[in-house]
Every structure is written in structure tokens, then in C-alpha cells.
Length: 311
Image (tube, rainbow, N blue to C red):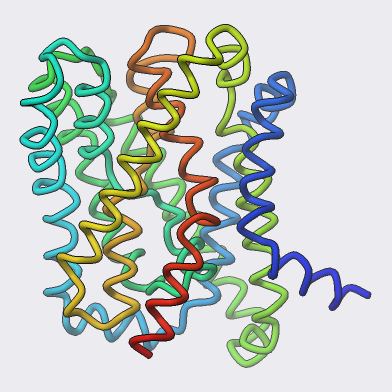
């Protein structure tokens, strides 16, 4: 029975993750109550995802780091500049949509990207190697992007660095301890069960990530729908561009570049600019955070088709 339940979770995992986000919106009290657990949930998600990555895969990325460095430079510097150049001629300088788009593009890649990689067929080792320095640069880079846009995103570099150290250190330590206790062969055999846990942990994490979004949506449903469409469009277009730019790379690496080009750590950005109810800019960022949980189920068929065609 447990095997059947695990198979059901894996088959419908991407839809379950979207359901988790909508639960957080529909039950704002629950989302708020679970917010203090977000760091532990994130550590658990990263830990399980790390267990699904073979040490040899990490070694392969680190021995030939050029692709990871190029993707890091792409998502950190090139993408926000590209978004600004594309939207500046068509949106007023004071538009919250312009500011949100550039800030989203300048925000580091989501730290749980390796977990999504398991579900989408991307390269989890590559995404982890890109994600750590991407987030480490955020305390200096994000305020710089905000300053250029004239947005008062006040970020405490020390607090952000501490959160990153807890998240990365905690997840790697837990993963190493699990390998030491259970052994790599046992962990390989438990692969399907671990994939189910990845789905469940991301689904649960989606609930507190939506803290504050429900009341903002209820107050301005039509406006929020438009902002969600904008955020979805931005995410989708950036993923397509990311894939096209890196399409000559191995297929898993190209899909990884696409994923991190569009999917960013918007929780970090919301913490810097304020709660969803504080203005149009924060509401757009909240809509972008929601896309993180609903976009995988939308792009999965395309990712799988590309992997089959190129595999």
C-alpha cells in the first residue's frame, strides 16, 4: 500500500506542489502559523534532494566548472540587464511591473532548484553548484539592482549570510550524516521513496511561502490575476530564452539553465521589499512566488519531450 501511495505521489507530484501553494492562499492563518517552520522545511527538502545526487555527479561538475560559472554569470548579470533593456522601452520608468521584472531577474536562483530538477529531469548537481554562489552574492547584488531601479530594498547582508549558512550547512550536514548511517547503497535503493519525500516537502513548504498572499488576493482579485499572468509570462519567456542560449549543452544542463533562468528565490525578495499587501511591487513579487509552485506542472511536458527528443 505504501509503495502504491508513493507511486501516486510521484506521478502527480507537480500538481501536488501547486495544491500546496493554493492551500497557503486559501488558509492564510495556516500559512502564517507555518512560517517559522520554513527554514527547517527548506533544509529537509535540500537534504533529501542532495541524497538523490550521486557524489560522482558533483565531482563531474566541479572538475569542469566552466559551464556552472557561465550559467552563474548568465542568471546573475546578463538576465536582469536583458530584462531591463527589453521592458524599458515599453513600460514607464515608474512602472511597478518594470521594477518587479528587473528585481526578479536579479534575485538569485531558488535554493531548492535541485529538488525540482529531480521532478523535471534537470541536473541537480549543476543546479546546486550554481545555486550556492548565486545566493551568496545576493546580499551585495540584490541591493545594487534595487538601487539602480530606485526601489528601497533594504537587505541585511549579515542576516542573509547567516540564513544561507544555516540552510546550506544544515542540509549538507544532514545528508552526509544520513549517508554515514545508512550507506550509499541503501540510499540508492530508497530512491523512489526519497522522490516521494521531495514532493511532500516542497508541497508543505509551499504553504508558508504563500503567507500574506491570500488576504492580498481577496482584497484585489482582478489586479492579482493580471499580476500573476505577467509573472507567469516572464517566467516562461525567461525559461525559453535560457534553454535556447544553452541548448548546445547536454540536455540535462540545458534544462537546468532554463529552470534557473526563470525560477528565482522570490521569498528572499519579498523579505527585502515587504509583505504582499504593502503595494503593487510586493504583490507582483508574491505572484511571481506563486509561479514557482505552479510553473513546474506547466513546463514538465515540454521538458520531458525535449529530453526524449535529445536523449
